[in-house]
Length: 231
Image (cartoon, rainbow, N blue to C red; front, side):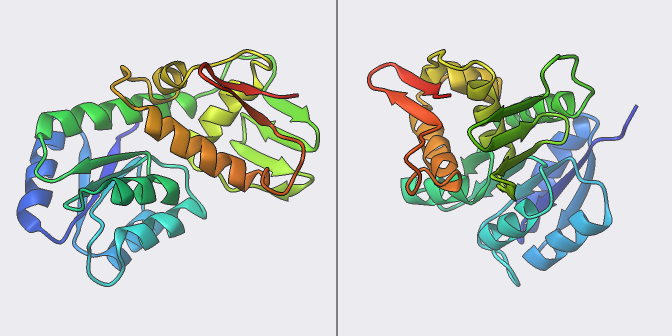
């Protein structure tokens, strides 16, 4: 069985040790670093399955670490930060994080979220027994096997959650999904007032698909109901 490795990047040693202790009890292999540059070096040199990042770190902050990770990797990222404003949370999600927890935090809740993200990530990376793994419509190509998206031949860089949302909608054209349904299917968790999370991801996804400049809207909002893929 593959050893699951989690990176913890936090310059507060006490917090990093606490997180590591709880995750090691779950059987995970832990790598701890105390600054952003070391986090990037760890990800480039080792096989990391999930990263837990502080935002305010020496050398390179968590936002920049996330930006660089997303240029090459699809691993889940959880921000664990003392920055608690809604703007901080939205910024983290827009930058490419999959989840955001604030300090102080409940270690068992963090473990639950880690387990949830890993279940989905590791399952998604297994061979998928579906017939249609490539979706092509109006210049947009979505490859489930390669986890890539192109628009008129140009690569579109999506976070794992953005990709999952797009594939969910595109693989069920004309079906309307509520924010609750999207959250439950993409995040694999119970819906707990997470409509803003879904909305932020879809807004960023639309921007990356050039919908602000393209009359062809791939994702259509059905007001008061949810979202659908518009073929």
